[in-house]
Image (cartoon, rainbow, N blue to C red; front, top):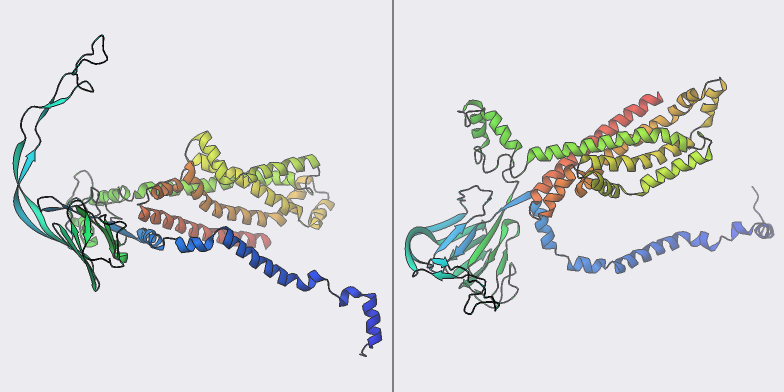
Length: 502
């Protein structure tokens, strides 16, 4: 091949300048796009103050929330009385049951005799009637009646067992020792001594260690021990929050006769033990205790999860059945009537332009809370979306197959059956299965606004801001259902599409 001379190249460049001189946009398009993306990212960083958000975020609080998903707390409280005695109390619904005595709480007890001053008994005086000429009769008490003492205060002598010293083992490196008027905390190689007098909290020393905080002098001191838990030292009380990994009482609650027993003991009772309840077997009693566990509410959670699954399935099936015939009316190449095309397409636009959550709020107001509102919301939204997708699939079919069926004199219904459906049915089935899988997740969200299912129960657990382990339990169940449905959907889609193409 001979090379072009400079004169010939100049002539070609003169005739075709667009080849040799690229426009500015063509030469710098990619650098400008990258620069624009960088500038937009910087603008978003500044506008939303992302840097300040990360800087001011309370990461320790976020860590505590995450820990609450996979752990639980036991909360003993050590109350200090004015007479130099102490009491250890647990919340009413403690994970340890009605009579907790954990080995990590070491208490020294003594039997002492108290002299308690009981208040004098009181009696109510009758109300004084108002005078006809004045607002109140002179000397009448305010409010119409008073309580007058009927006797002198009485002293009651009480003998009881009290705590004189308590030691809480938070972890291998953290301990809290409490005696009347004083708290000694050891954490690692550091220690903190705190004096309490019923009114103020005074640390011994000027500086607190990094794991202790006090907002203002004299107020409570908060101690943080990482994953082991935390504690608060107040003027008359020490509150302990010891954390344990796992979900407390997941199988049996504290009211169950099987509570606190090992798995082997439970199996032995079920297999050969004497009946705990004469009216039923131990197996039936154990299963009943699991289902009606007051802390985890397994039966209610599973029932709500089944409602969510049924809600997603029924809503998707109804939407598919309605969208299928309407899509033929919306497709221009199937239905040649312009008015019918436009009305159907605008109907689809109306249904899908309103978000599923808004539809759920509307139907919750119309039908009341429950699965019916959720099914209706899914049905309306998916009818619009599937109708649009189906009509677009119909408009993109190959007309040769339809013309071939029509050329043999087949009626219109047969033309659609043999010339159109074989091309679009795999797409229709695939999209319907995907929406069924997706609606299983969406049903959880709309359930939170009152549309029933596990979403509402999940929202109720989150609102308490304390039952995060229950939230984790329900989220785990939802994930399992989504994974299973995803596998089923993929398998059905592969088998259905493969069978239709063979």
